[in-house]
Structure formats: C-alpha cells, structure tokens
Length: 151
Ligand code: HEC
Image (cartoon, rainbow, N blue to C red; front, side, top):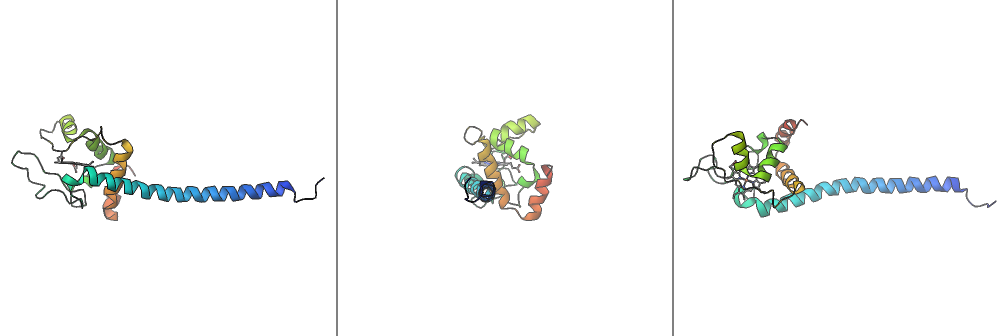
C-alpha cells in the first residue's frame, strides 16, 4: 500500500480545478462572443448597408419623402427611424428577401429600393448586423423593440 497522498482526495481536487477553469473560459467566451458578434456586425454594416443607410445609421436626406421616381429613400436605423418599430423576424426577413418581396407579399403597392441580401449574407451575418444596429439605440428603445420579439 503506497503512503503517498490518497488518490481519492487528489482526483476530486483536480476535477474542481478543471471545472473552475472550464467555467471561467466559458464565461469569458460568452463575453468575447458577444463582442465579436458586434464587431462582425459593424464591419458588415459598413460594407453592405452604410452606402444607403448612412455610416452613422442616419439614413438618406429627406428619407420620409419619395424621390422623383416615387421610391422612398433609405430610412435611418438609429432611433429617429422606424427600424425599432419592427420585430427581429420581420427585420431579418426584409434584409434577406429585400423590400420588394416583402411589400409584394403584404400587398403594399410600393416600389422598394431595399436590395435582397439572402445570397450574400448568412442568417448569423444578418443577426450580427441587427445586434450592431440595436447597440446604437438607447436602452428604452431597445427594451420596447425587445418586447416585440416576445422578450
Ligand atoms: C441600395 C441602397 C440600400 C442598401 C445598400 C441597403 N438598403 Fe436597406 N433600405 C433601402 C431603402 C431605399 C429602404 C426603404 C424602402 C423600403 O422600406 O423598402 C430600405 C429599408 C430597409 C429596412 C426596413 C426599415 C423599416 O423600418 O421599415 C431595413 C431593416 C433595412 N433596409 C436594412 C438594411 C440592411 C441591414 C442593409 C445592409 C445589409 C441594407 N438595408 C442595405 C436601401 C438600401
């Protein structure tokens, strides 16, 4: 019989250490994941959306007035626009399928200048862009929009 430290005491201590290290990594991973998603969303927004919706989400000038061709300019995505009036599912659908398909389905007789991004952006890309857009809203607006998602 060995007189070294009893292994039944050593093993659980190791497990505890491993569990706390893993737990810490998981927790840090969560925070990192959120930050990474936000950064990814900001990058994608700058590449794909900023030309029309504005680098600071400010939209096009006089966005509430139809242009000469009768189409509406791109609205802002900050809290001065109406992006936050819609739930996540509707916003993601609008971005994926483009404005025209969605308006046609709803029977709205309007020509949309909002392109479809379903071929270019994944579901996660679109979610990251929405996370970035929402990060620019004040808390109360974010809370109102979250309620529309049933949250
Ligand atoms: C070529 C210009 C253009 C680009 C690029 C563009 N949009 Fe749009 N977008 C528009 C226009 C114009 C509208 C308003 C017409 C409409 O609602 O169909 C619009 C409307 C929207 C709406 C509906 C807003 C609301 O409140 O009803 C969302 C959401 C949206 N865009 C998101 C995006 C995102 C995200 C990107 C980048 C991935 C993007 N758009 C890129 C022109 C553009």
